[in-house]
Length: 539
Image 1 (spheres, helix red, strand yellow):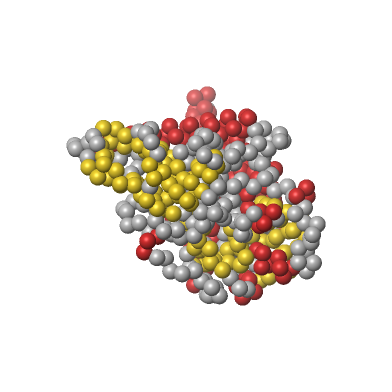
Image 2 (tube, one colour; image 1 turned 60 degrees about the vertical axis):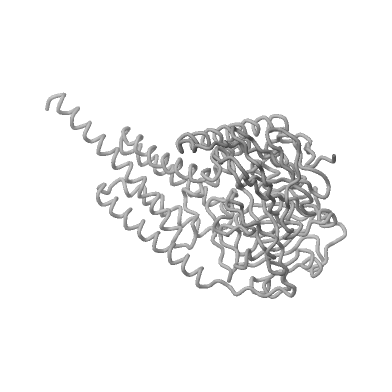
């Protein structure tokens, strides 16, 4: 055989082995997903590695990712992990079958180790899922690509069917919510302004923001779930879901906002929550006089906490199991989450709550604190958002309306002001208050003149006015005024131009937020004494 013939055969074999490596890696991922679905979870090896990555990445890098990607952060992580898990075996296959097998084995072991870290999985489930994926990847090396792809397709259909059945079963088994002894009155006509484009008074569950470090979202069986209350208490308590529903409940209208929400951003929602007051539960267990801190634990290992002194300052924690009249969805923390109106999400508003530990401050190091966030809870100051019009909108000359929502929990919004083109602040019209912890509609009628204009809005709380100082989400939440820039023109400009303007504005805003976040982390290094900016300014 000539040298050219040998090289030709070797080239064909390399190409074939490259394809074998790609398909074997795909089979490894598919078996991991199928095995996790069989075990009634979504925590596959690939997803467990994603959570491991989130836990390991430097927090400033995570903040930059959230600022730039927002809701696309986890899909980007998932796509990147899938790309790496497929491309690495395919590329190492050029070095030979032994190198391919070694690569798949290493990836399988990393997946198994990631599963082993997950506290929501039993050791049996973690080993079963991880070993199945590992064996499938190695076994796929000796299958023809066509056979392996057929198996992958069958597994994909199986995963879709199993998870569809689980969702259907969850919808059918929705619990009946108890009626609270003193339900909140129906919403009056004056609380909601009939202005197109303004945020609804209650954010629908499917539009309510979802941000967390969980990857993937835990699947918690209500029938097996229990809430444990222990630590520095006189009578430790364990409650099932049905026992929790049997306790007297209350309704609270309140906003919930992520600490990563930029000024005027989407990571905030308003809902009517139902649940049990934490203070009522503490009255049953008897809190020791030595305790000064509450530590909360989620089913996935996440932890958060807050000082007992917050309750004395008027903050009212709620063990919430329903929002807007329906049981919590899985993405929002089902079966139970804690809600502390007026405190940013990461500090205490923990989802998939499993246990409550009454302890002392010096003994409680939570997840966010271990990642460099301040130990003191981050409180929400008065803020407002302009919903109508949006940046790059084109309006006709004449009377126009500017409107939006404002919030200042736990004491409520006192006033909203708007200024146009940097002029004097003008008082806006407020809708009736839904509650001190809820957001409030506001509006301002304006005589629009031709040209480009910008609006800025600020809210007043009972303790002062919204801070003008521009601040990154770290360490105490984003600060500054929401600003919207628009055109007033008798002739509608081309839609393409307006869209390009909107796109450029959003791109610049995300880049500025990412840069501000990086600078904030440089100024407030983890381990240094926490520095807190003032949320309000008295003037």
